[in-house]
Amino acid sequence: MRKILIVDDEESLRNFLNILFTKEGYNTSVASNGKEALKMLEKSSYDVILSDIKMSGVNGLELLEKIKEISPETEVVMMTAYGDTDTAVEAMKLGAYHYIQKPFKNEEIKLVVKKAFEKKNLVKENMVFKKEFKVKYGFENLIGASPKMLEIYQFIKQIASTKSNVLVIGESGTGKELVAKAIHLNSSYKDGSFVPINCGAIPENLIESELFGHMKGSFTGALYNKEGLFETANKGTMLLDEISELPLQMQVKLLRILQERSFRRVGGTEDITTDTRVIAATNKDLSSLVKDGKFREDLFYRLNILNIKLPPLRERKEDIPILAEYFLKKFSNDFGKEISRISDAAMFKLMKYDFPGNVRELENIIERAVALEQTKALLPEALPELAEKISGEIKTTGIDEDVPYGFNLDEVVHQFEKRYLIKALKKAGGNKTKAAEILGISFRSIRYRLQKLGMEKEE
Image (tube, rainbow, N blue to C red):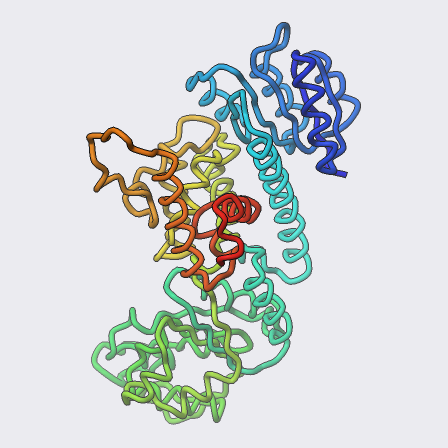
């Protein structure tokens, strides 16, 4: 069962929270002070601990430090009747999941605890997920546990053992090369070389020599025989990234290799056979380029025997926390810093952003944030570049500075909330789960708001 420890020196609140969360199906325990809580933690483990800050003896912040030493995986929610911002920041730096001020509403604290369990489960699932896929499939560099990514992992597992060509399609920064590497590492070619080449980065007059090699004297500057990348990749895998940039003349020669499994060096007279698996990648619509005469139709069909479409990060936002935590650990190690977590407020900012640059942009943002952060938790102040980028931020323009007599604040708030709920539901096609993601709230919260505003039946 999901285990909660409630720590508060106020008996009435302690008992109330015990009853509240027992009714919610949690396995709850109580402690009247920090010292008692530490004794209980030495004998048992807890998923979430709700702790008051102002307590005699061992106070809440001291208890929080001890909890993180004894049980780092336990999520801690701090409670206080004092609106002290400095204390809140200090609690976040020490590793608190959230900070809630008394008096709080029942739904508010239930939601905070629910979110704390969700985070704990996500971290646990990610650890299991990464271990399982690393051991079984060698997918250690592909991070994500969303349904779309799990489908891709399963598809890679199915096709890796074949020798068929693969076309990987996705926006820039989605991880096309990582997918190609995963296919290679799980294939019969895994003992050979993985050779990536960016077709758009090599000058047109040099690309033939790069791919196929050349003989001495075959052109000006050819001072010696040179092995091409297809020879290097023999018995291995060749990734032709940005395949749409390959010149038409080279497309003809590539087609011959795919059909005949042989080629000639520039200036050579002998056919060289190759057993190379070809994976092509692109961020463009090749079928449209075929219609426009910019890409050969026969080559397109030869490459597109199997295809993988990588979703952009904005379509798999549930992977953002997993990716962000992965990059946090990576860059903390690289920079020699002890940044153990991303604060709730910072993660909220990340979840609100659409990441047009996809995973690569998220990686760059976390790298910069880790380089600037001076505390043990990554705080929102380390993400200044997101402030202007976040889509859907509430704008304050258009609000009258003067408040007239008779102004009904409840009605204005009611209409404001209703308008944004309607917009989100329309954008999500009536899907409440998706609308909740757009608004940055939980599914339970959107249901509560719809019922409160009398919109459940109107929907």
